[in-house]
Structure formats: structure tokens, C-alpha cells
Length: 307
Image (cartoon, rainbow, N blue to C red; front, side):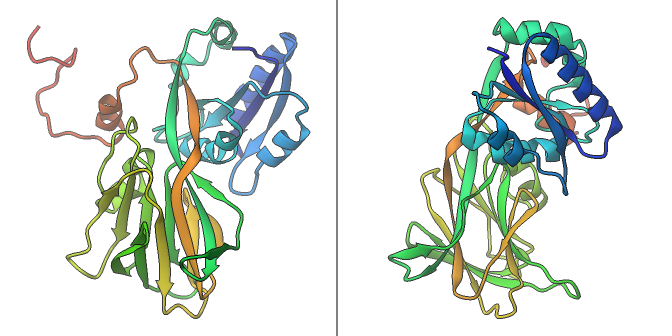
């Protein structure tokens, strides 16, 4: 990997991640690398400035924070094909990040990256747009929104907790109407996040699939469903004339859905590319540790019963 132009994004408001970002910037600039650095958070989005101000190809994005910081990076950088090294510095769960222990010797890290001693993991993304007009020839009325975890269609109001009735259409065929708190359309990566909390299926990130999960449905027959990756999922809010229903991407508000509009979700034409430093990158170990799967009461030191 060449390190001629590198983005460094750190968790806004976190002194530890900012300190490490500044250290990385000094070291990379000493290697004649052009560095673009800034905070990323709920009120800080550095990526449009990064992408607009770079006159050369961006080789790498170093993302220092937790899963929220990483998700924001993926939404902006995956469409540009920029690989990400996400490190858990100042984060909490760290489901998507590399461990800090493999990062802290940063001078050795730059040598390792330049020597191509790493792996790249590709993760599926989803894209969504708002549509209106005729079902067979819809008019697209919004920009494209991207997510690494999930698209969520649910109502939100300042003074009450409204429920919704959402009709789901897959590849032009009506599947169900969901009455409840909303609907999640998730990638395999997102299946271990909000979708898992809503009793949706856990899908291995090596797969390409779309998981649709109702949130607190008012019907025992409303069940999650896993769809092929080429499916087009259209979601129609029914009976909402107060502009309560909104589209959320990875937990962030994307846009409100006006009466007569619907959300069209499909697999994105881009993937998030993550730099992997770990020698063993086991999905099952990750869910055992991060989701605290404790079904086993007898512990094994080397993943085997007998040795």
C-alpha cells in the first residue's frame, strides 16, 4: 500500500483519540504523506471536506473511535473505494474495529502497511432513495443514502411515541403490512446490531443478503425474513399525514418521508473495505466476546475440547 495521501478521522470530543490522531499525522507527514485530519461525530462530518479538498487519490482512512465513528466513515468512504483502518480508541463495543494493541506501535504499523502485511475484508452496503408517483415508473426525489448496518423506517415525534403501518413490497410483490414501531432492512454486518436487538436473524458477514425485521410488531405472525442480495425492498408508510415517518441510516436521521412517498432499499454498488491486522479474524469469536454468548459453561483455551 502506498501512503501518499491519508485521511485521519477521530472521535469528536474524545481527547484520547484526538491525541493518537495527532501522533499519526506527525509520523505520516514525516514520511512525506499528505494528511487530512478532523473530528467525526454527531455534529461533525469531515468527509465532504476531505473528499473535496484532496487533489490526489486517497490511499487510506485511519478511523480512531468506536463503531459509530466507523459507520460514519463507511457511509462516506465506501462509495469512493477508500479502504479503512478502524481502531477502537475511545470507543465502547468495538464490533467493527481492530484492537488497540495492534495499532499502538504506529511506526511499525506504517511499515507493515507499506509492506502489504495485512488483509482486506469486504462488507456489503445498502443504499436507499425516496420515490413518489406511479409504482411502475417511480420518480426518484432524493439523494442516495448509504448504510453499513441498516436502513430503518420508523416514526419519530417530539411529544409522543407513535406507531406506524408499513407496507413492504419485494421485487414488485406485496409481502406484508407491519403495524408496530418500524421496520429494519439490514446487511449481514448490521444483523448483530439493532436487528439482533429486535430478534432478527444473525447473518455471517461473509454472506450477501438482506435481513428485514419488524420492530415490536403488533402481530405474532410478523416475522423477520432474509432476502437475496439482489432484492429491491420498497416500504410504504400508510396513513401517516403528520410527517412522523422518517428514514434512518445506521441510527442517524437521513430524511423525513412525505405522504405519497416511499423508501426503496437495495444492495449498494459499493462495498466497505476494512484493513484487518489480526492474524485470526473469527466472526464466531467476535460474537462470543462482544455479544457475550455464554451458553458454554466449560471454557476451552484453544477452541477445542481435547488437546
